[in-house]
Length: 265
Ligand code: F6P
Figure 1 (cartoon, rainbow, N blue to C red):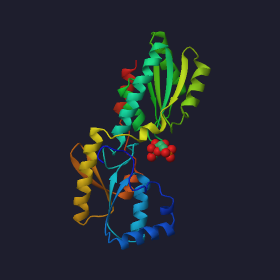
Figure 2: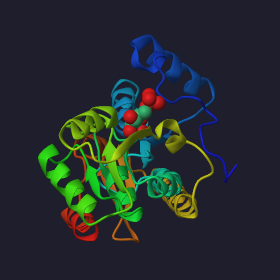
Figure 3: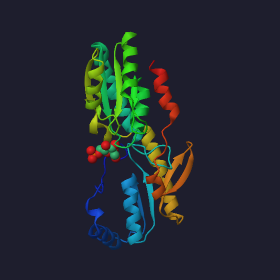
């Protein structure tokens, strides 16, 4: 249904599909059902699998970008990202109430094993004092300086958003290191975890999925293959070869990083 999350096909992260035997079985299933082309929905793993599959058993495959991480090249936004960041914002707003009430520092870990898009955008939206992401080298000294400044200005609370793949470590590690050097704040850690990967999709995600879905069908029917359909600059469709979409992470917007610093002074 249009308003549900998850998968109905249950082909996500299939271990069988990673073996030759599994690929052969998939091909057999498609042959028996007369399926001549495929539209696959997912991230880099999905596109790698699709490329391998079509190299062995040629048939046209078109990709649709869907991952909460938003880390694919060739589209401004991936399906699932907007829902995930809205979930983060809702959760952190609630945590902020406790943080304010008890003058606490919260170190909050969000998903993003290799990418900081969730951390960065949700960090801006919740007015985080700092955001730590894998794409930039994190300086704990700089973080502590920032927290000290806030403390001396009698900020009621501080929130630090850490992407799980950050080089400074996860939220527990960051909290431990901060406490060692600056113990003024009563500090807590919160790992938001898998609430970020489920639930009813946001309006933005539903519209994005609808647009990309229809375009993928058009592209498949036009005879193209081996590309991911993306949307860039709001309204422009872009067709990116699978290997380019998955190997080249889109760049983190430096202006957004700057914004966190400006807004949290
Ligand atoms: O697709 C990557 C991702 O969304 C990461 O950001 C996150 O670390 C991971 O999935 C969670 O995966 P799992 O459910 O296997 O823990």
